Image (cartoon, rainbow, N blue to C red; front, side, top):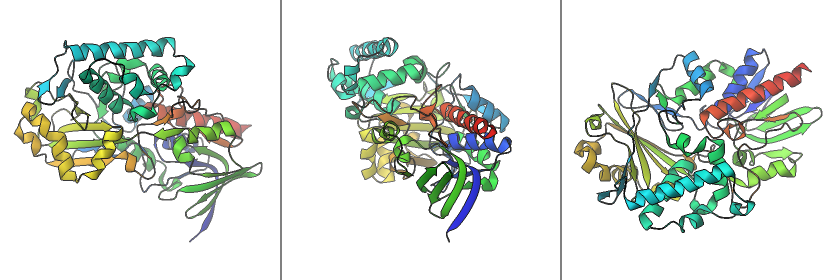
Length: 434
């Protein structure tokens, strides 16, 4: 049954940005309604309960050492942090051999990464915006070094190497604190996790909003005039004074804006895309590998992947597997059992045969998610001048914008999502007070 709803502020998207904005508005005494296309809250954050009763994140999971806003939110909501268990360096596996940290391939890859890091600090010429990552990789000497860099790039940015420019990589590195921050645990972007999962943080933010969230109600069109805003959804129309759009630009591009957005803003959605990423968690009664030199790997055989020990202190054992880029999509053709065997079997020689019999296996292909479109974030297509972090979030009339890609600090991270929501809410509160 179609219905008309009136609210002061409509928020499009119930990810961390939308929930953060709605919470601040609600606390300020402003009537707010959150419209979410999916049947759950969280967006790119999603926690599930395993067969052993533990909670795992199928979406974003890490808290960085300087992610102060999300740490404060976790503490406020009664969630428990624990440090990421890690090694000085992951073991890098290529077929049946392990690469030596001081070997030619590792040193060559390290030098190439140092070059990209330097580019991120001094800036890249505009012409590098058309030089794609696969072209750059083709110049790196040695097939093993090239493959290592390809896997690291796929896991770090989830892009196809022919759809990401070197200029975009350098810009993201500069905005996200450099390679050391991106790849590090202690002192870096993967310093800690939540026992209950980041997805539980989203759930608890939503609990505080109660009926102010409407699930499974995608916004299909937004009419914005001097007289207000009308959002057209599956269940009817919502009339609002202000609207905050928090979904990433490629997903916002699916909305019919009436009138159309200015050309430069509309171009962001057309010229950016969501990455492809597959994530799995293997669950065990205990983290048996911790007596066997740890369980952190970079595996170069297809599908290239990163493996982490993400379990809480005292167990159970959680092994996290990430596959990015085109090889994440290749996994879609396999059934769950075959996928699990392909991802775990090469590690059994290092961790023992019990690795092949997890008590539970949780997995999600984010690029197949209808309403997020992929992860970890929206990225600019090569040659485009739109979509670089942070993307433009200046209000357009009574339309305001949030989402991790718009964050000035920590764009692309969960921290950036919360910060962007708080910023957009502050904009709206100030505008309504005038």
